Amino acid sequence: MINETKLLPIETIASADESAVLRLNNHHAEELSWLEADRLSFLLGQAFYARRIGTVEAFIMTFDQDADYDSPNFLWLKQRFPRFVYVDRVAVDEAARGRGHARRFYEDLFEQAKRTNHKLVTCEVNSEPPNPASDAFHARLGFHEIGAAAIHGGKKTVRYFAREI
Image (tube, rainbow, N blue to C red; front, side, top):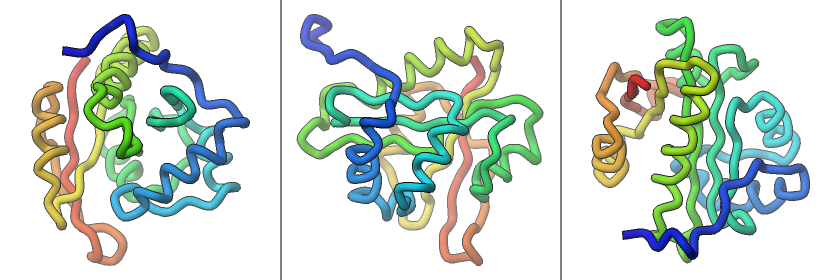
């Protein structure tokens, strides 16, 4: 059980946080995809919900259907759903694992989605290589599979998940 009295706040990512977000993102580039500083700034400007915990011991970045974003995963969802929130990336520093950061991000995101009348939160999980921990995490949060695709010229395969709000 998470001790509520010791939880760090969930805060909006500010421009001063960008270098730390970039470091954490690129440390997990295999799962998330590499970003350059200018691309990160652009994406944060497009984000529906971009938050951090602590001095960026964890972050989340999401987009809604109105974002100017060329990710093949985002575009796959945009072709199928008129209104949605897409969880593009979540990263937690190894030293901060097991503190419930990812779950807290998702719970806060679900509340933000409700406040803005979004009814669907989506994400993708790599299927090759498999990611059973992420599969189990999303299942516990109520996500169900809605499709699959091969992206980047077939170099990567993913499965898409959704949770109705």
